[in-house]
Image 1 (cartoon, rainbow, N blue to C red):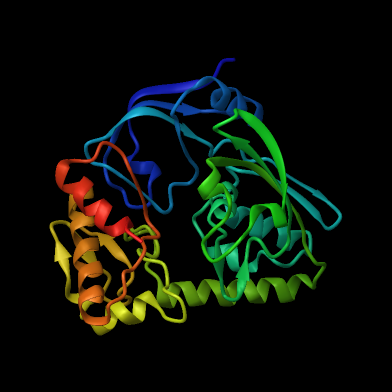
Image 2: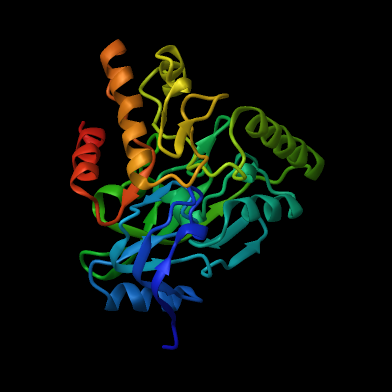
Length: 301
């Protein structure tokens, strides 16, 4: 197969954090078939979609990385919607609206892809991508087999699916969306966009979305606000002044800057409330000794 590959590739402009990190081999499959071929052929590869919640180490990544952004087919069959993993969920939301199908309104402001959204059960405004999902086609990295999993099989929970525990890569998903009035869908989308504009930084300010998951029956943003996290800054990274659960790369931040800032935020909440926040950010790459130590702390249960 004639698959596009780039060597010593700087992924900075593909990540929403805009942190430089050199990837040894970056593959860009143009179809689901090419993606499956790479997954069957390459060992120990990293698979990335729209990189909206990914922090890549400034020390780079001496590993094969597969970017799925070109695997972006979408098909409509009445209320059924088939979407490949690399499709941006904002586009899925807009196209569903054009077909007078609801259920994807919450995704209009998200920078993620379908694969990543299913993998971590993206949600907002009382909606989740799992609400109308029928099946997902996944690749099992352990057995090198393609599986078709039902909604029940995927065991969705808050920011969680079985894919995270079983080494599954989402290839595509099928949804059954409810018919609705196009103007009503558009109004919901506009409302969601306004909410995001008022409560979250735009990607013009490089950021990775919510830094920490909400603990049960509480809000990470509320806890961080209470401990004064909005005043925190490390190197070129700082906490956004309008919401304490967002980190902005405002001045050429490194992954070390961001991780040290995350640790400050984590420690302040732990010290004041006895709550250990869990990162929503996914950190990959060749970690320095300091970064390895910090990531182990942040990922402890």
